[in-house]
Each structure stands twice: as C-alpha cells, then as structure tokens.
Length: 135
Image 1 (cartoon, rainbow, N blue to C red):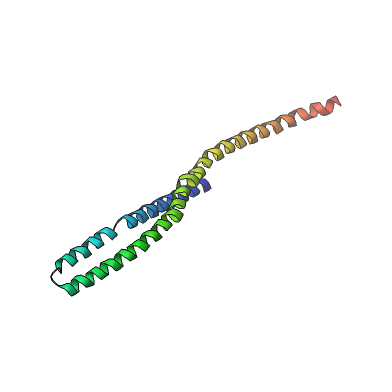
Image 2 (cartoon, rainbow, N blue to C red):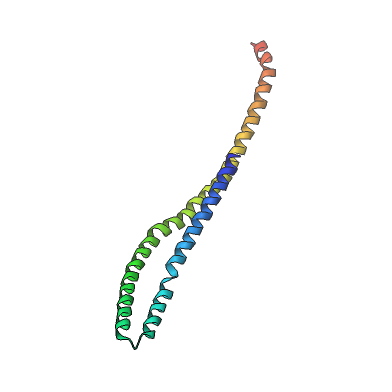
C-alpha cells in the first residue's frame, strides 16, 4: 500500500511537471508576435497622422527592446529551469519507477528466504533430539 501511494504521488508529480514544461514553452512561443503585429497594424492606420504614427513607432521600438530582454530572460529560464525539469522527469522519475521492479524482485527474494528459514527452524526442532542423543 505504501508503494502504491508513492507511485501515485510520483505520477502526479510527473504530470504536473510535464504541464509546467508545456505551458512554459507555449508562453514563450505565443503572444509576442500577435501583439507586435497588432501594433504595426495600428501604426499603419495612423499613417496620415504624424504624431500618432510617431508615438506608435516609439511604442513599437520600446516593445521591441522589451521583447529582446524578455527573450533573453526566457532563454535563460528555458536553459536552467526547463532543461533541468525535463531531465528530472525523463531520467530521475523514470529511474524511481525502475526501482519498483528492483524492489519487487528483492522483496520476493526476501519472502522466499523467510519461508526457507521458517521451514529450516521446524526441521531443526525435529532433528535436535537426535543430535543430542548422538553425543
């Protein structure tokens, strides 16, 4: 029962980590391009209005700068966090799952040894008077 609970906990952890990895990748890939395109589209709408056109140009430039630093941040986050999480999910969690098979094998061997030991002590009790009689 303890092992079943731990297996369930590991499965939930793996699912949550997979979800974080996927959502982080989606956040990195989406959103930025659509917003930038909408700003450029809006700037084109104000092509006849120099003040609005220039103001939007400055906003677009600021957004591009912000986007550049945001990309650097996300790249570093991807390299550190996502890479480590992915390795953890692929290697460490799978290794824990592999330990279950090893545990079951060792447990079965231990149970067999206990059974043999229990049978051996019964045989010794029956044979013990014979050994004492020979002395």
